[in-house]
Image (cartoon, rainbow, N blue to C red; front, side):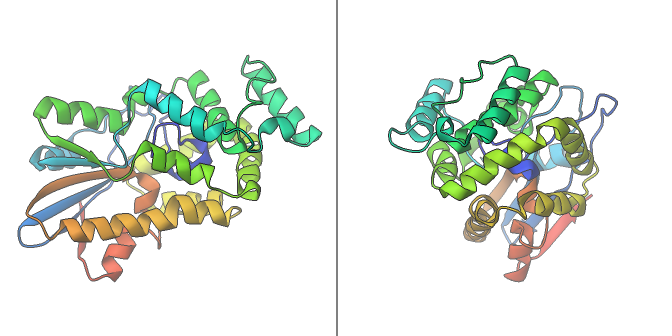
Length: 287
């Protein structure tokens, strides 16, 4: 997902605590006679002291001719224009229309972050949720420049590898924009409620990612999304099916591809890996 997809979908996000400097995240491969697709789960923001781009991950990346990400982020100005168009559409409900108690909670969170209590009043609830999810991470020192996608893109550019995206930024923002009013409201409410535990939540997620513990990631994912089935279907299940289909099609062409998507898409019974296995593909975990 795009870099702003943070606490709204915790399974796509992680960081590291200050004492942790080495990680051994999970890596898988799906092969046929002349094609190899490596599958690697990403963390969108990290502190710069975590070492992960080495060992089997680096070897698989170096062996690949193409890097495939969830999307190739457009320039910042283009991204902001998309946010303005989709997240502040004239006539769509905004957070300014929230019931007084909910708006008061929002104002309190913004004051705590040093922002104007009305700074998000023009935003639709989904955009306000994404913005709020960024605030504690920035204060805690998490940086998208150290996130997996940024590191991989820089390495691919240096090596002259082809880089492509499975989705576009407009698609990814659109997933949120097309959520029902009820799902958007639940997303915003859950984000507000989870702000005080942001640090602990992210540390638990990145600890599991760093150890390659897909089961722990799946457990957190299910807990985080269980209360919002529409969000789970939109952000996780439909996309997993589409990406599993893409990989199956890509296996029909020769070459070696390094696919890097949010770690939550590779965890659990509904993951891309599980779908490929049920379709008869052999999914191998690499050590």
